[in-house]
Length: 194
Image 1 (cartoon, rainbow, N blue to C red):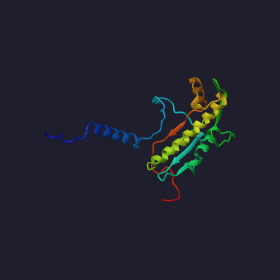
Image 2 (tube, helix red, strand yellow):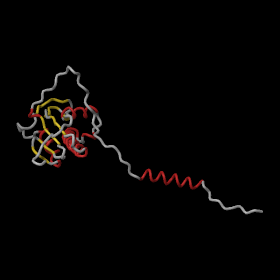
Image 3 (tube, rainbow, N blue to C red):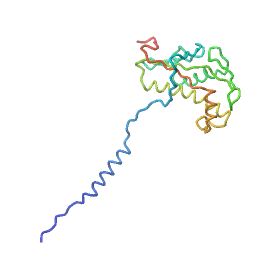
Image 4 (spheres, rainbow, N blue to C red):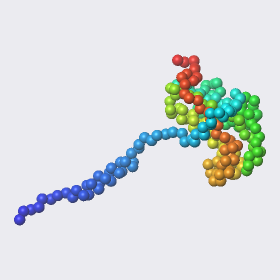
C-alpha cells in the first residue's frame, strides 16, 4: 500500500490572509479630504438690493501668496486673529473704529446688543490651502466663542449643547455668522520683501 504524502491544509491559510489584510486596512492611515463644514447662504434674486455696509463695520482680513496675514491693514499673526475678531464684533468699549452695535429685542433673550460687523476675507491665488483653513478656523472660532458666551449667560450651557431650536435660533439672531469671502486674486497684500 502506498503511503499518502502529507499536505498542508490550505483552508486556514486563506483565513489568516484575510485577517491580515483586514488588520492592515483598519490600522493603516489613509489620507482624508479636509474642508470647511459650513452651510452656504441662499442665493439672492438678481433684483434684490445689495445690503449697505459701512466701512466701519468691515473687519478686513487678507492672506498673500507668502501666507502672510494682514488684519485691518496691518501685518498680523494668526495667534491673535480670533481675539481681534471677537473684540471688533463685540465692541465692548463702543470704539467708533469698530463695528456698530444695535440693541435689538430677540425672543428668549430680551434686549441684546447685535453687531453690524462683517468679516471680509480675501486671499491670493498663491495662498496655501493650509493657511487658508487656519484663518477660516480662527474666524469661525471667534463667532463660536461669542455665541458660547451669550448662550452660557442666557441659558447656562454652551451654544453647541443647546437642544431647543428656538434657543439656537435666538443665539444665531443675536450673533449672526457674517463672513464675506472674495474670489482669490493676485497680490492681495504686499510687504517690503519680494
